[in-house]
Image (tube, rainbow, N blue to C red):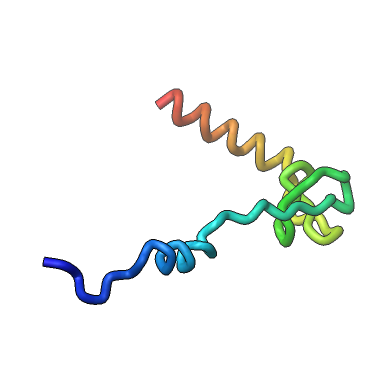
Length: 73
């Protein structure tokens, strides 16, 4: 049997025209000058909008300590 209300190829492609991926928008960090995603914390220095949000060195040390504990167990 044939589908009665079949979508044509052109109609399907017109619908899918909005499925394309956009490029990631990046901004320059006010503190260190590194590139980061817009409206997101800088992963290099841990600041957002000129304020210090996270101490990156302490977070990295805690992550390394946790990884070592998991490897040991």
